[in-house]
Each structure stands twice: as C-alpha cells, then as structure tokens.
Length: 277
Ligand code: A3P
Image (cartoon, rainbow, N blue to C red; front, side, top):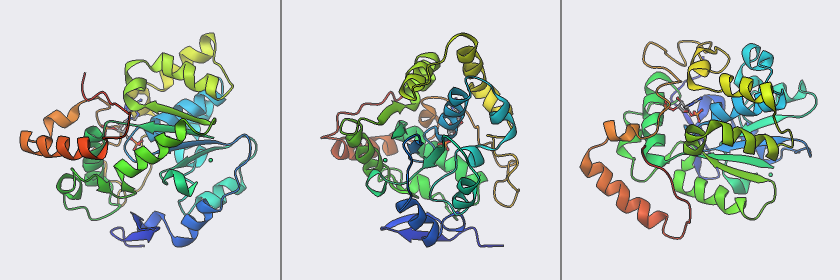
C-alpha cells in the first residue's frame, strides 16, 4: 500500500501524496470543461461535502436516490485526484466537479468559503482521523499562517473571490450563510444553476442536506473508506457542523496572534466572515 504520509508538490503547493500525482494534477490543469459543467471550489474543510450534496439534490430536483446510492467522490469527483479521469470517462451529461485548486490553475464555479478559525479546527480534527499526512499538530502550529495542505488559505480565498466579481459564472457563498439560511442559500444556488427548485423539490433537498441527514448518509460521511485511511474510532467526518468551535480550541494568545496576521493579510480584501453566533 502507498505510504500515507507523503506529499506531492505542484506549483509550489503541497498536496496529500497518495491521492494526488503529478499526472493527476496536470490532468486537472489541462481539463477540457464543457459548457454545462458545474465546478465546486473550496479550501478544504469549508463545506465541500455539504455543497456536493446540495448541488446533487438541486440537479436531481430534490430526489435523494443518487445522493443515497453513489458516494460523493464518484458523483462530484475531485478534478485533481488520481481517480477522476476514470470516473469522468464513465460520466454522461451534466457534470459536477470538485476542486481544491487555486483559481489561477483553473473556470463556471461555486466557491464556498468558511471562517478560517473554524477551518483550522475542522482540519485539525480531520487529520486526527484521516491519515492523509503525518501532521503532528501541524494545523495548530501553523494556525496563524494558514499555510496548510493545498497552500495558503489567504491566497486561495482572496484569489477565488477576486474572480467572483470578474467572471459572470462564479457564485460565491459562505459556509456561515448556508448554516444560517439553508433555504435561502438553496434557492440562490438552484437559480444560479438555472434549475430553480419548487415545493417538495425544495423541502426534500433541504431535508437531505441537513447536518443530521448527511451524518447518517454513508455516501457522504466517509464511513466506507477503509480504516487504514480514515479511522472513525478517532472522530467523525461530519464532526460538529457549527460556527465558532474555535472558541473551544484556541487560547486567547493564539487568537490574538491570528487576529493580527488576519488583519494584515486581509487589509485590501472586502470579504467578511461571521466568526460565531
Ligand atoms: P466540522 O469539522 O467543523 O464539523 P469539507 O467537506 O470541506 O471537508 O468540510 C467539512 C466540514 O463541513 C465539517 O466541519 C463538517 O461537519 C461540515 N459539514 C458538512 N456537512 C454539513 C452540514 N450539512 N451542515 C453543517 N456543517 C456541515
């Protein structure tokens, strides 16, 4: 079995090695998008899986059949991961694609961002159960820089959101907006996808995208991944699903340093986040 603690460097960014290769990353770079493709772009731990579920349900008009029988990675494959070419060869019609790549390496996108304190906490817990790399508390040590796997959070979010005003086909939404108003968010997303949901289509989609439904859905909760890769006795992928868990994790000193770095890094960026509620 491939070692799980290696990284693959590509365009100066580190990626988890066993799921990314130079070939798979180059495949993503040269990917031929089609007009009807939908791309979900996120920095990890920002609500990727949630948006994959929402878009699947919107495209299927609230019918949960696909979301209950096909794993998220097969119905919304990550472009840059080694298996995607094979999955996409077998896919017909409108495609849902996922990526953690920065904007300049890629095109009609839904970009999801989450407040970075919660991203860091979620990432930290994720790496305790997912043996993608040997982290040794990497995420807490480097918390203020937010230079984690998949590169700098600041570059990722500023890069992608700068495109949201420029490209007509980018929808920007935050994890916190979805959390506070899932129905309003679902209506926005479905109109962006030119597939507005009505009546039961909408209520069914909302039900299946709730935290509790997704926690019970083996097609998105990653319980089917072998224990050697994700050890569910060490934690759950659908962990807490809340805003503001960073308050329970970081010290006042850590938060102070983070806030200083954040103000500096985001000084020219109009984006704001809800930190707790
Ligand atoms: P936590 O670890 O804070 O609980 P990604 O899919 O990008 O890896 O993001 C995973 C994070 O999104 C996890 O955060 C997970 O619990 C949260 N999440 C997934 N589905 C959710 C939902 N329906 N409602 C709220 N949070 C959700």
